[in-house]
Image (cartoon, rainbow, N blue to C red; front, side, top):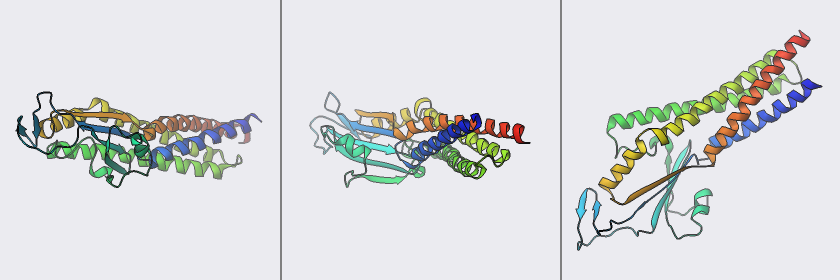
Length: 248
């Protein structure tokens, strides 16, 4: 009876882990960003490295314009909007975004690093960092899917080896995805890529450039999936050990 209860909760936690991990993997909202340009108080601005003084005639975007980004494993998308638009957040979160929306493969542009703001060596390092992040993500997703199939084959109490193997895959998935989350936080919060990007934009594009970063739902799903993944993995290992002791 106790073994059946443990199996029920382990299966429930494993199913929740798979759902949250697949949602985190399949949705492109790991990072949300908004950037805008505010004119200098003295009325001067820098366009492409050229200082424009008061009295010069230039064509600039409206100060109320804002560029929104959202990025995930597959895509990095951006579109322009107006800060006064009441539906701006609705357009950001859902797919009915304006026609000006532009998407590119994330691995081709590891935001917030760009080849314009970094030299070739730094940009290649960013690609490598993003590559390892992507590989760990793929390993975590594949491991949780394989673990689920193995556990299905193991029911009901057919083989303690299958339960142990399934539990091992769940634990491996949780550990790899934990590395993914830590790497992403280090990338955005600790490494200097964001500051370098801001400095480049202020020196080459707009002195009043501002950038706001926040984590999206895809990022939030990952720790929840990791928690359930580790918990179910430990339970399946315990179930496998218990079956081995009782029936062998």
